[in-house]
Image 1 (cartoon, rainbow, N blue to C red):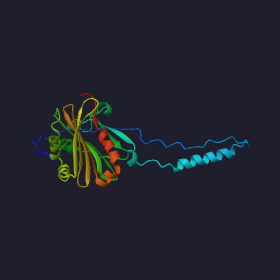
Image 2 (image 1 turned 180 degrees about the horizontal axis):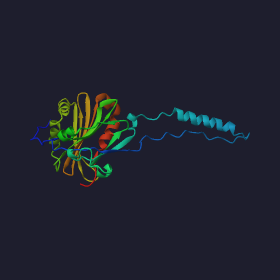
Image 3 (image 1 turned 135 degrees about the vertical axis):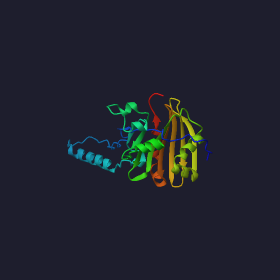
Image 4 (image 1 turned 90 degrees about the vertical axis):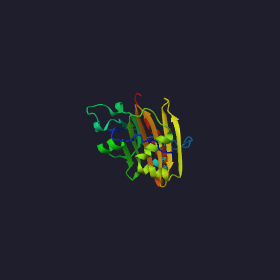
Length: 249
């Protein structure tokens, strides 16, 4: 693990946040396959009933025998969350009818059925947590975003992760006990740089995406206990990859 440099005062009282908006996203579940109906020859007797009965039976049997994929198989349906990442002093928004979508600074997908955890104003102001969603069936399977204002560009990958860990004891423990670790740099279609980390810790798997925009550092986390990771890996990777900053830079 990299050696920490002088702390960047991550997630201090100057860190800020506000609530965002969540907008339903069309289901990505593929349509059921059309039943295969055999080509029927002409019926000398001219009776339609003798033909329609077999056709109906075949169609119904085909439909009933087709089982829709599970959420874990396909990633299921998602909603898009629009986060505004405003200051803690503006907790609850600015009022009026301003669209959260129009004022959003970042977005990410939320799996169908996940619940939002309301982040307190104190938490927003002290550790920079801006938003969080979790699986109600397993609360430790979750995604959340933190941010820090006043950061113009990314430091080296090891320095960024080290400073994130300084304010997160669970992340420190996970890194210390990691059975696998990777860090890479990616660029989106606009050339914006994202650091992508994957940590396979003792009993927990994490995906982290970090970027800078608008003089802020944004860090998006996806965490899951090992059993949930093994079951929902494709869906969780989709959630991880859906995070990006939006708006003008």
